Length: 216
Image 1 (tube, rainbow, N blue to C red):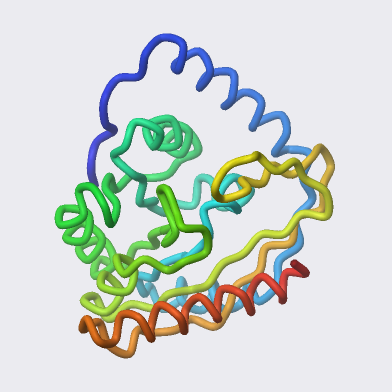
Image 2 (tube, one colour):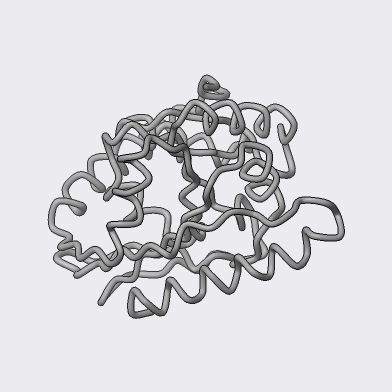
């Protein structure tokens, strides 16, 4: 498990403190409904390591929902990932630092080690900078090497703010109803270069199906 990255400038630190306080107040007002929760409970009962696969734009409510469960999250080493990393750590997550574009080799080794140890890892396969809802190969490679399941995961809110960012980042409004849905745990069929495109498309379709199940 990797340590947090570089120290934030004081303005970013202040924004982080305010943001964490805002999230704790806002998150307590959200009302959650879970669809297909048995998929996750079954894997946990068998003590199998697995990957929560979620799109970057739906990260906030899912971080809140799964707080203090002992899961790890893969967070970019880019500067804009540092605030997310510190916020996630404050919610009880372990951190794996890296992405498919920076720190990839080290991140994949750490991912495989944690999965083989039976841990849960959250990954945004379209992060840290998109393109939105496109499955980068890192999660596929890690899951295939560890023979671990990927669980497509989605969050849909009945009312939310959306940032004007590449991922249309979602912030559910106060007292929003948030549906968290899980798709069928699925293993990667292969991770060769020839397989990567087909498998990426297959998991993008599974993610789309899970969002539809959540009502999105």
